[in-house]
Length: 160
Image 1: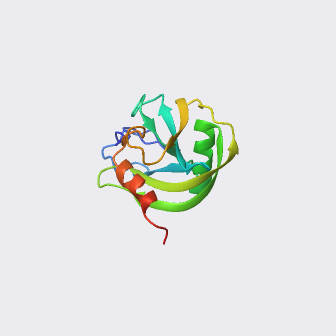
Image 2 (image 1 turned 90 degrees about the vertical axis):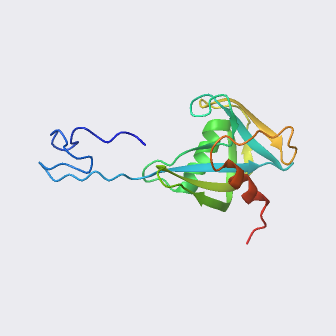
Image 3 (image 1 turned 30 degrees about the vertical axis):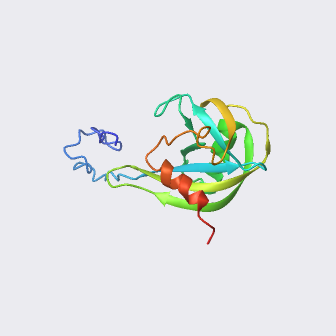
C-alpha cells in the first residue's frame, strides 16, 4: 500500500493522523484501485499474452491488464488495456470473477474476451505480444500474479 499523505491536500497543514486533517476536517479515504485482466482468445482458441516491460513482473509473460481510470466503465477499461498493450481489438465476454485479498489495495476484475480485429503488435507497456495455445503446459507461461491460477481455472469452468 502507498504511504499515507503527510500534508493535507486541501489546506496544506501537516497531518497528525493518516485518517484526515484536524484543521479543515478533510478525510483521507483509502479507496482501492480497480484493475482489469483480460483473457482474450482468437479463432484458434489461443490466449493473448504480453511480455511486460515494467514492474511488477518485468520480462514476464502475462495477460493484458491495467487499472481502471476514474469514471471509466470496467468493460471499457478492459478493451482499452488490450488495445494499448497488444493492438488487438476485443469484444468483452463473460465476467470471470472478482479477486481481492485482505490488506491488498487492488481489486482484480477478470473478463473473457474474443478477438475482433486489430493488428497484433506490442504497445508501449509490452516488449512483445503473442497468441499462445491453451492447454500446452510446455508453451503456456506460468502464473505471474497472485490470482493468475484461479483466473485461468475460471475459463475452464462451464458458463452458468
